[in-house]
Image: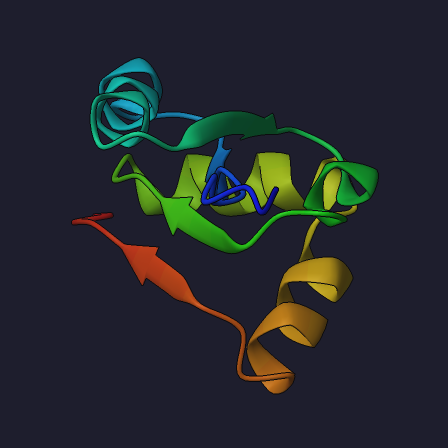
Amino acid sequence: MESNKRKKIRIGVLAIQGAVEEHMNSVRNAGGEAVEIKLPSHIHDIDGIILPGGESTAMAIVAEKWGLFPALREWVANDRPIWGTCAG
């Protein structure tokens, strides 16, 4: 018997600053699985990324400290889905 169950989409939410919980709730309410992204290793095995708004300088400082920029650049370079809300 074939299953018509679809794989639940996994969306990572950059959990540095901004409306992180609100974005995660929106993903869940849409039927997806929300994953907090705080480290480069959290970017693996997700289907898309949301960058919630926040103060852009503070976000950049934390992202640099946590080593997220190389992983995010690679994600974008590979034409993977990414959505950013107002940041700065």
